[in-house]
Amino acid sequence: MTSSLPAGLRERKKAKTRLAIREHALRLFEEQGYASTTVEQIAEAAEVSQSTFFRYFPTKEDVILIDDYDPVIVAAIKSQPPQVSHVQALVNGMRSVFDNLTEQEWDAERRRQRIYQSVPELRARALNQMVLAVDMLADALAVRDDRSGEELEYRVIAGALVGVVLAIAPPGGDEYDPRDFGRIEQALGILEEKLSRR
Amino acid sequence: MTSSLPAGLRERKKAKTRLAIREHALRLFEEQGYASTTVEQIAEAAEVSQSTFFRYFPTKEDVILIDDYDPVIVAAIKSQPPQVSHVQALVNGMRSVFDNLTEQEWDAERRRQRIYQSVPELRARALNQMVLAVDMLADALAVRDDRSGEELEYRVIAGALVGVVLAIAPPGGDEYDPRDFGRIEQALGILEEKLSRR
DNA sequence: TAGAAACTGACAGCTACTGTCAAAACATGG
DNA sequence: CCATGTTTTGACAGTAGCTGTCAGTTTCTA
Image 1 (cartoon, rainbow over the protein chains, first blue to last red):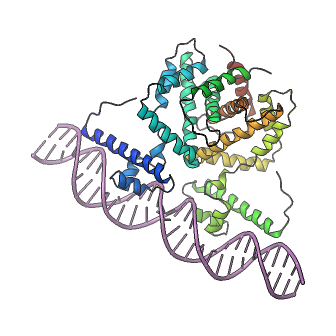
Image 2 (image 1 turned 90 degrees about the horizontal axis):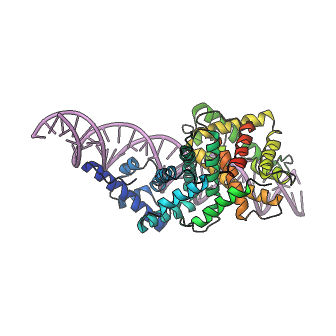
Image 3 (image 1 turned 90 degrees about the vertical axis):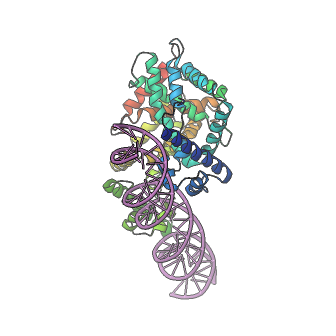
């Protein structure tokens, strides 16, 4: 993560444009809602043409949907010591990444979350990304055992973990503060215990 | 399930129209792909106006997305004897419903699955429905214990189960035959064992 | 510094989707 | 059977997301 080597001028400009579009989009979404903000408005605010907007983001949804953290978390999980359980490896991995975010990054993250929790359309696509994350997680866990993420066993574990995180996230309209690891840890603990009984 | 009491003529006609739209839509999607089939074409084929199409299905996606089976499965789970484990209750519930489908219903179901497995847009919305299913499943499992589905414990279990089913479904481009309970059962078995070790 | 490659803006076009309104199909009481 | 009110429908117009083209500009490279 963190690409701080903007080789050419072209790259730097692109990154700047990209950021500008995202910022303005986020702001406008908050101010007037997602649906009633047009791409034209975003483009205008970011001082680009509509065509340019769509060159940077294939759809209006994508402007708010990109998540840069997944790969970092995966890396953190892979580097967890082998004696740690899979569940703990996930928790630790997430914590190690989130603990290092600046307040500003946190803020942006929370704004994003809030918006797409409230727009079904966006929620659906975010879910899709989480399912894709199952692949990565399965792989990460498998690596810790020197196995392959293709194996059913790891897909199952990864699926269950992601499923749990998904299931406890939105209990209605509550604000979801991702810092609330307590809840996640608690839930995963329950999973570890309960499922083996009866 | 199975509404065979079409009181008035109006109701009967509505059901017929609804069915016609879905049938033609499915066929056209198969013939020319989802994206390149317009609502206009569907409406024309079903001999209704575009307005009418949108009165029956809020969006083009909905025409293929509705799933009538979830509530039935939930009912089947609730009626499982208490000594059966949660995992088995889910497996049995699904089996009891799917085993009673006619070949024709199976066929329609498989066609639907195939289409929206291949269209990311549809996949995303289908996922959303599965997440909604977590609520229902949590409730069903809780009922078996005379508890409430609101309790974290049941949300966790339901989330994990749904997560597993999601995770093992699409191993690439394979045709997904929902009759393949073997895989599902195997996966859920692994969940029951593995997660408690280490 | 010249030419190649990438980026951009303006424009035109398609399609999903919404709203309105009058006509048609159905239901119901006399 | 008919007049009534209710529901459903079609035609039409309009908005907005998204795609494609093409010429002009900016950046890179030799």
